[in-house]
Image 1 (tube, rainbow over the protein chains, first blue to last red):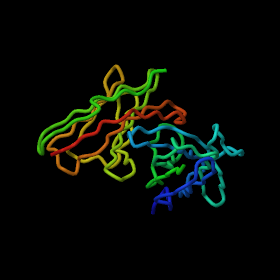
Image 2: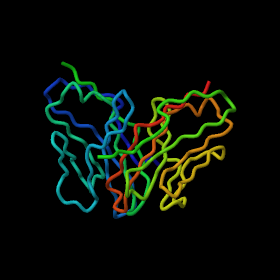
Image 3: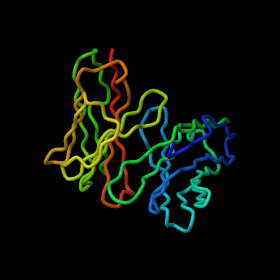
Image 4: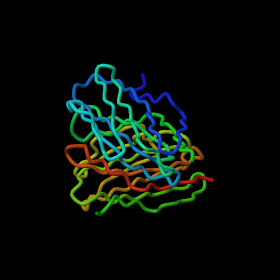
Length: 115
Length: 112
């Protein structure tokens, strides 16, 4: 079974509008971390935001917020006031358990911001 | 702030050749992870090292090997290269809390 599911292969959004990128996850661990990364066409992997499984409040980092719904096992990324530079591939990832664990990535969503 | 350094940035090899990719983690990061991202795919975990010992293994082919040295840099050695090995190879480093994963810019390997 897929551990991380991103059901939107591609999304379009108008500049200055908000957009939500979906991510659902599957784990039996009580402790886990959820991450979002941005990958522009240049290829580097840029960390955006992190949510721990025990965090009661949704994480926010500037224009990025994470809508964490633990019971539904979803961790959607919300980008407010989209900018042209937000056009990129976005990956949701999970670290299961604690300690030095590798990340498991979803298949990604390609976001295109239109002027 | 220092980032994760990967070299080379680009590499072109012929089938059946050998390639060595290098990764220099952020200072005081004690864990290194290697990922492979094929064209249009998500990154797949290959292998990780903690304090110079292999700590976890993912979908790393037997043709590949890796190690971490005393200065914490890591090398991924790839032998008998195949066309399907063409991919972006990322190295990431982290500390105990596994919150601060930092990725390098990647090495783009093309096998022709």
